[in-house]
Amino acid sequence: LADEGFLIHQAYEEKSALKIFERVKPQLVLLDLRLPGIDGISVYKKMKEIDKDVIVFIITAYGDKYIERKVRELGANDYFTKPFDNRLLIENIKNTLSKIN
Image (tube, rainbow, N blue to C red; front, top):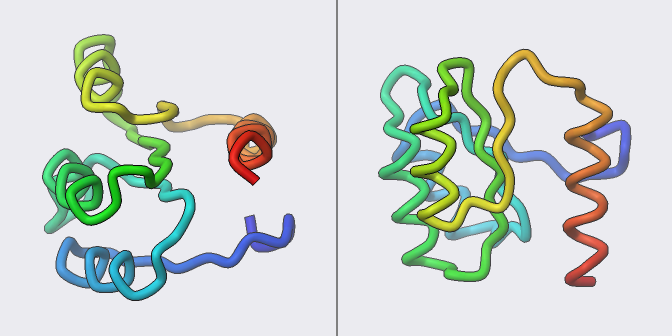
């Protein structure tokens, strides 16, 4: 993503993710549902409380139709199951951001 000109901020636990989110106020978040110390659904809900308009793409290695339906019902903008084609992710990010810019 950095090679495509995107500014990247990374966090590996919920507290730092939310601190970065509040400080940076990103237009788009790539959120992994399951990382050690992170409940992706909880982080997603807290981010939406802070900024209801933030665009969130969910990423997971543990995807199934139930989880996908659940995060889409919550309002996630896109959903990717690992492994995925990075080119498709970048294309979807660019298309989504072009609609709001």
